[in-house]
Structures are given as structure tokens and as C-alpha cells.
Length: 519
Image (cartoon, rainbow, N blue to C red; front, top):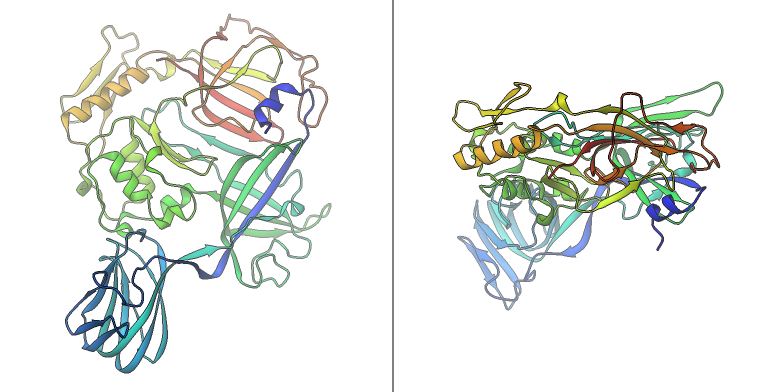
């Protein structure tokens, strides 16, 4: 299959199509139909553990509760995911009195139901370990059987195309960036997407409008939205995926155009600032990699993007004392602290959460030379002296990094919460010294829309180049003249690799901020 990169460098004129899609949030969550509990009818031994006054009868395939107040029938469920909503159902047979509770995980919040003859259904969120509890309360007496444990889904299964409600002005820009001047690194910033949707009859209004796309079983707030682009209808690249924020929506009637619904879409990083450590329960692991995986591998996040241990690898996998973090700490702030000085984290456009060293991706993603010419503008060149730090010191400790002969006399004190091991502190200090003690040039380059490039990709750029009959999306020629060598003898070596630290997509143009790569 032809890729957008191949088309970008091969054709003189390309057609650009934008696609906007949503997955609507369900007003009432539904179970996914996949059973994860075992021995649901009590016909086998060794799966369930019965507390006091609870008896399992394999022949009748029932569990008998004899006037139980606070003891449980339990099962370890290997496929139970932390911080995930589940629907627990079972039949109460031969009901006499009392009520029931269910709980997912030893730290989960119990949810109860009034005892009765018939089918019981209770929704609970898991927390702690993977144990399912069915508890009798208020002297519950009766038998239960046909236990069901299924994950709840909060979104419709398929993406719905809403491109018909967009115009060329629906979105002004999509930006993601990492501050290449800051020694802290951490979060790759993904700007929110501000949308203007055609809303003549209220189709893009919230669900209370009877004409709304969300009316009748859906909720606009935190519905997912995806923005993609295609070249000549042959490729597909995701530019943005996030969540609609209903609180920002308002309808605007323009005198020269149809009514417009203005609404903001948050990036998935917003989810990390919605959740605090207290909501996660007990965290496992002592190193950065293990802690980050335990924090992120939860339904709070995996319902929106992929979390895999293979994509979590800190620049320095230090030992962490989690007791130094308050329970009210937001997940995003924990990740920023753990990444400080050596790593970055973000949800990539491929839908995968990544926590990785501040190192470029493996291969050179593109080369922008003279033939074929694809550069619109090369500018804002900086030699790199503004970001040089020659001395790093750990606060209230002896770990340090110093260049032998400092030129700029610049220094920085480092303090990272939870990092107390001397070896780890020195490793982080050395990592920073390697990244900041020498000059690394930076500059910006404007290109026709280039959707296949990602943060931390390597590229090569030749500054000189004439734009003669180069292409631009949907236009046959570029009206930008010739790219001349600036006065002052700026030198951008076409053999040098540069790393993308910022990508700004606006209309049919991409602006890259690049930093020189040095081993």
C-alpha cells in the first residue's frame, strides 16, 4: 500500500482530504458480552472460596448463604483490570431475607442491592487486587447461581463520520511540542483542538436537542473525536484524537454563514489530570518503569489508548520512594516528576502511550533536500548557546556534573521527588550533562502538510533550495520565491540529523521545530 510519505515526495500535486469522526459516549454503559469469571454455576471445585455460613453445592450448582452478615464468596479473576467498571450479575434463588453486596478488588468500593428472588445486576469499579466478592449482608439467606462478570463499555463500537458538518475553517491548527530548552523534559504538550462545526438544525448540539447527533442514548461530553487526513484518498494519517468537552460548547449564528457550534476537544492527556493517586489505590513496583506501567495499565486510560510494557522505558530507570507523593497528586504530575531530567511521555498518534528516554526515534524519517524541493521556509536559526548548562548539582546532596572548562558559567540545581538512591541521582545528572553541556543548533522549517512525521523523529534538512515547480496540497505551484542562504553565514549541514521537538499543522502547512542531534 502506498504511504503518505511516498506520495509526499513523489507527486507534484496532491489532493488533500480531511476526515472528522466521533465515537459517541453511551448515556448508559453496556456490558461487552465477554465473561471473565470462572465456574459461574458452581459446578466445579477449587475456584470459589466460601466464607463463614456459605456453602457451595456442586450437585445443585448453587451457593447457599445461611443468614450471612458480612462474609463473602470470593474468586480470583485473572483478567480483571484495575480501575475498570464491571457489571456483576447473578440469580438469587430460594430467597428468604437480607441483602447483598458486590466488590471488585480488595480496595474496591462495595455496591449493594436489595435482596429479592430473581436476577441481580450491580455495576462496580475495580480497585486493588483481582478478587471478586459477593457478600451477604443484613442476615442474607438464600442461594445464588449463574454468576456473570463482564466489563462495561462506555462508547459505541464504531467511529461515525461527521465530515459533512465541517468546513475548511473547522480547525485552525493541531500542535504538539516538547520544550527543547527545558532540562526537565516530561510531558509532550498536545494543544487542545478548537472546532467550528456546521450546526444548521442542531445536529452538532448536545444531546438535549432533539435534532442532535447525540440525542437518544448518547452523551456529547467526553465523546471521542478523531481528525485524519488523506492524500489522493489513498492514505490515512491521524492528526489528532481526543475528547469533546461539552462545557466549552456554544452555538454562534453568523450573518454570512450557517450556524456554527464551537467546541473544544481535549487531548488524552486530560485524562491523566482528571485522576489522582488516591483513586488508583495501592501501587506496585519500586522502579520508574514498573510504577508507570502500574499507574497507566488501568481502565481509566486503557479504555482510550493502548498501554503496553514494551513502550515504557525510562531514560534512567531509577528506584522511587512513592511515599513522598501525596494521595492528591494528579497522575500527570506524578509522570512529570518521574520523567524529569531523562524521559518524555505522551499518547502518540498511533494510539499508544509512550514513556521513553529523551532520545530520537531509530531511523531518519525524512530528508528535505533540494530535489524534490519541499521546503517553504527555513528560519529562526539558533546556534544553541541559549540552552547550554555546564554544571548540574543535586539539591542538598553531593552528586554533580561539571564540564572541565566552562565557557558560559551556567548551572542548574536538580531535585526530583522520590529519587534518593545516590547511583540513580548521579545517572540522571550525567544524562543531563550529556544533553545540555554542548551547543545544539535549532531552527524551524515550513513544509506542505506533512502528516507522517512524529515527535522525536529524525530528519535531515538542506537549507539551500529553489522552489520552482514544487508542489503544495491542492495547488499546482508555490508562490514563495527562492530559499537563499541568509546573510551571516548560517550553516545547516545536510548530513546532520535533527530531531523534531514540535509539530504545528495549520491548514495545508506543517511547521517543525528541530534540534540538532548529537550522540
